[in-house]
Image 1 (cartoon, rainbow, N blue to C red):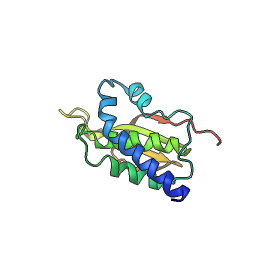
Image 2: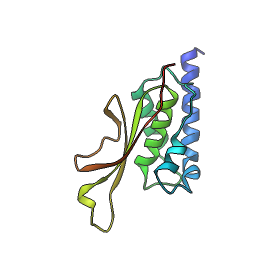
Image 3: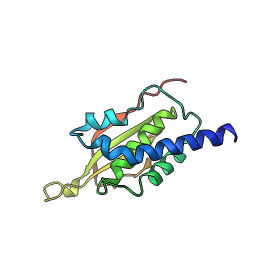
Image 4: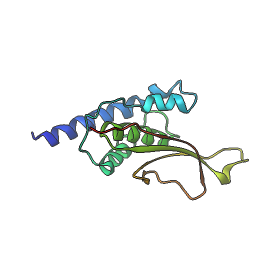
Length: 142
């Protein structure tokens, strides 16, 4: 097995594990700082070389059949993508926002998306989204 195939297999297995255990990790999260502690990947860059588009695609795939957190798909995908982009050494930003048309209604419509190089790569926001909070990963030179 080539090194690239081995890296991708390890990546996919770890992402699958994170996708399936994310609801347990998030069960006591109360605010953005709690969510960001979960998404923080630390200093490891073990998936350097993987492309941001590949990571975003795999995050959507890994989070597609949730055991719980069914009503928060964009949050599950966003946390996964942000964490694994960091592990690949790719500068990324996770955004949290609300739909301005839902403000004042019985149910507030929230959304989470991820961008790299100032372009949304996962769950692009609708034009009516207002950003409430952003966090940029701390990716330094390899």
